[in-house]
Image (cartoon, rainbow, N blue to C red):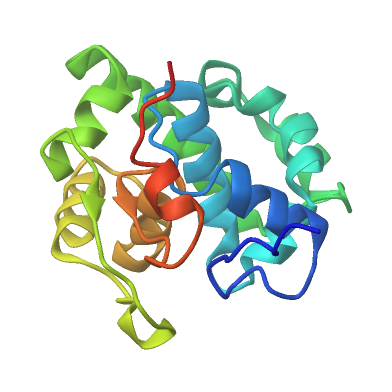
Length: 195
């Protein structure tokens, strides 16, 4: 019988969705604008809650928010707001829902200016992932200067609900930062480009 894989400590409760997220998505560098918008949307709803809560509602969010398509979400109006506020499958925060619709419009503004949101976003890390050497849970920072710069710039562009701590979590999720522990089997895997 093979030895169990060593992982980061945070998905340790055996939750299959958390384990799958850790093992296949977290920390994998992506430059796909749709995926980047999905993570921004989910992270903005996560503020003040657990990632587990959001992850378990992810497919409901996907359905409620037009497959995370910023172009469609940017056109949401009052009927959509009422529909979303009545949807028990998502987090029903009027302020967060309004922020996502607003942020979708701002997201598209950045796409027009930079050619893609990815081109804009990855500039904050010099277009390559920051690799931390996390050895214990105490080594995890709450945020990093690059997340502060990213948050400050987004705020200046009118984005809402995306402060430095939220954006640092976003950067970890989309692989702008490799925060897998050095003992985790994914630490080296996420640094190896897929063929």
